[in-house]
Image 1 (tube, rainbow, N blue to C red):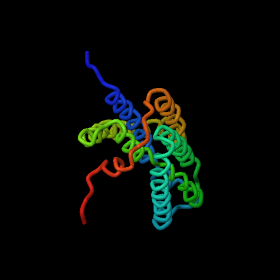
Image 2: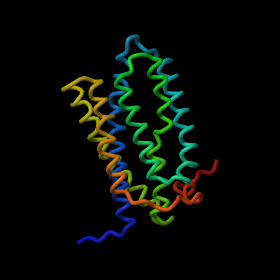
Image 3: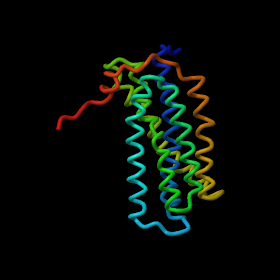
Length: 205
């Protein structure tokens, strides 16, 4: 029988969280283009560009904040925070029918930070030598979700409606993900500041 130490089990649970998260993300990625065209007034490519630009800005602001917050309150709380805000964002996408609602909804992307939180969590359960291998392991559930999530999302959309499928995605994700974070993910010590900077190789320009 295989024996896994505490850190290996933590990485395994993190893979499960990562897979669920990316399942919801890829489900949404499949539907969002259709949702943005199913509006009361057709959105131009410039309208879509403004939405994407503002969303990216909100995401960047969230990235700056989450690094500081994770150091003080711990990654588990940040996982929950990110899950809740992103789930609201996913449900909201299913309700948006105008440019302004899509635009304002992007504010919730400040919480779209589970990827970076997961990488910072690895800093507490792996050594620097183990970290690259652990990051590669995280790509496995991500790849699986990239295959299955578009199929599931589109099939549900065909049986119901496009918007219903998107709202189901946003509703199911926290129901599945929050218990895993609360009851299965080990609580770790605070994240070393230097470790967060060493998660990925730094390119020299």
